[in-house]
Length: 190
Image (tube, rainbow, N blue to C red):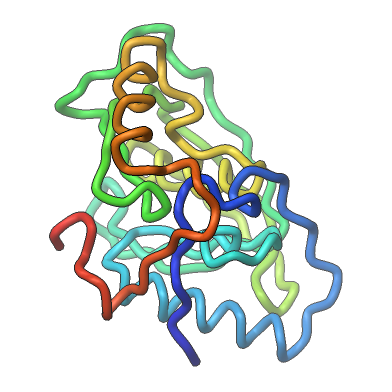
């Protein structure tokens, strides 16, 4: 297993749709193991393959759900079905999101309250998960990565303006930037 560098906003792989997996072999199993190790080292709750520079439709997660139950798993070629996203403004105290590929920044974003994710694991075995609240937010965030969308691309007008200023200040539009979990300082201070 190996820890991979996490690429930063502006890297082209983050901004295009990930390719479906067709071969479930030892190479895929190794990649998924690496992704879990990278996630653990990053102190994050989810990680999509594009975030380590690989344009494949895989994400891993390791977080507590809204009931305090630790959930760790893998989705390959996932399909996400979400409840309607409310038309209200996001609450900056309760609905803030961050991203390992947008280091040290977080912004409020409205998400669906409930989702169901269907897919397979790294062996091709079917996997289904229904989540609510915080855990549903994680599933939507990681699924979006596989569509070439980062959470900052979904911000409402007010927060999008703040993101654009921060993006310019941090240089988060230039390809070739990354950080190494477990080596570089944790950008979120965990």
